[in-house]
Amino acid sequence: MPVVYKAEDLPALRQAAYPYLKKKRIRHVEGCEKVAVKLAAQYGADPDKAAVAAILHDITKALDLSNQLILCDRYGIICDDIEKNSPSLLHSKTGACKARELFDIEQTVFDAIWWHTTGRPDMSLLEKIIYLADYIEPTRDFDGIGKLRKTAWADLDSAMALGLRMSIDDIKQRGFALHPITTEAYEYYKEYLN
Ligand SMILES: [Fe+2]
Ligand SMILES: [Fe+2]
Image (cartoon, rainbow, N blue to C red; front, side, top):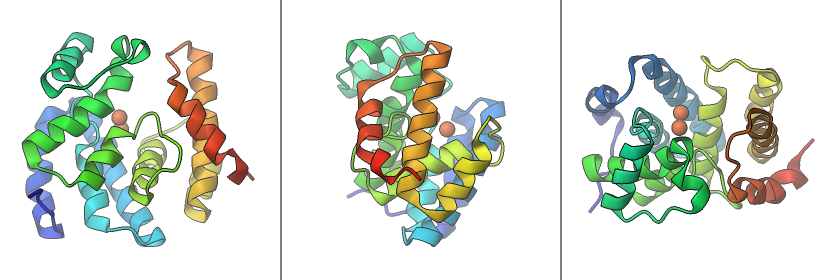
């Protein structure tokens, strides 16, 4: 049976998880946890599950492509051609598997980590919370973040639409790999755009 973490377990979980992060990412993960817990309170999700997913969501982010691919092999993650060349896309999937291996997380937490980079159509409440907390936590700074933050506190589905739209624009602008599921997610949520 997976572990159902409670608030009193979180300090030990942070202590066990942070050594996997690059130093500069710890503040991001701390910010992500705080925002995720607040969003959970606002939208009626379990704050402890939100905290666990946030604490662990970037646990393999420090690994380069070859080490990401080693983990894919170890965990039996099937990668498509886009993922095979993108450590950024792979870290959410390897992170979910690594978090399960190390900390025996629940499936809902696993899924929130798994989908936190690309999004997907029809996301669970916790998946949306982690996607957005990752995007708007206090250390983030980019054009349009004010509007995205405001929207996240007003309506989660509108915020998904806006966040996915902004992410797609940013990925295209930088010439990064855009995974088709992100486009599918945007198509699903765009009706909520204000
Ligand atoms: Fe991430
Ligand atoms: Fe992150």
